[in-house]
Image (cartoon, rainbow, N blue to C red; front, top):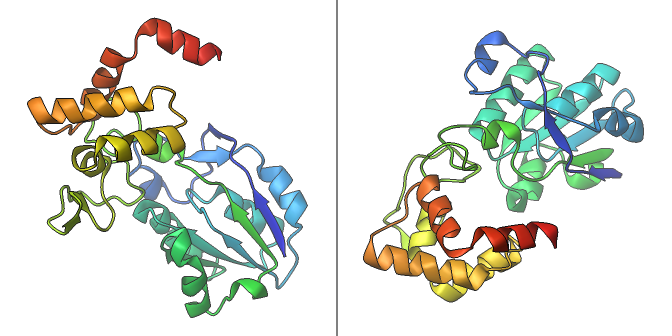
Length: 243
């Protein structure tokens, strides 16, 4: 089984799956830079089965199908919008695309239930991390170019501050706001340091806890960006960018 994983994306107009579906997205979906290399490496042949673990807007899957229409691609994604893309592509390809909504941690079970145990596939693809169609959305809170609810979830649930909590944070699918407003300084600092590789993790975590204790919950991307800017000076930002 061949495995290919990469993370080099640029925004670019994408050949439309359908005008109506793409018009529901704020900006054009991304296409992968290395899509030709992916197709060459995997070398799809008639009757083979592949798994696209990060379907997104379907760039890799469509390229594989263009190279060899007689394959089947099982397409996993957590994002309901991506699943909608996969469903429409499935209709256009007579079921050669099999949409699956779920997390990486659920993938083996989901694939088995769809009649595709991982050991029976000929190749898999992973292009991990948020895509431009998520980063550019004005409502999902992945970026700071626009003020938005501090969500940052791969799902599009609009439910904040779930009543089912553990240690101040919802047990399932917490938003970024839930995490920032519910975790302790030490937990926040670890998240910033380990997952964000943030040099000033402890300082920012202290500022977050102090802010929410005096001014209330942090709910928007602008609140968070302004708070970080207030405790990490421009000189430190410059030093960090050069290091």
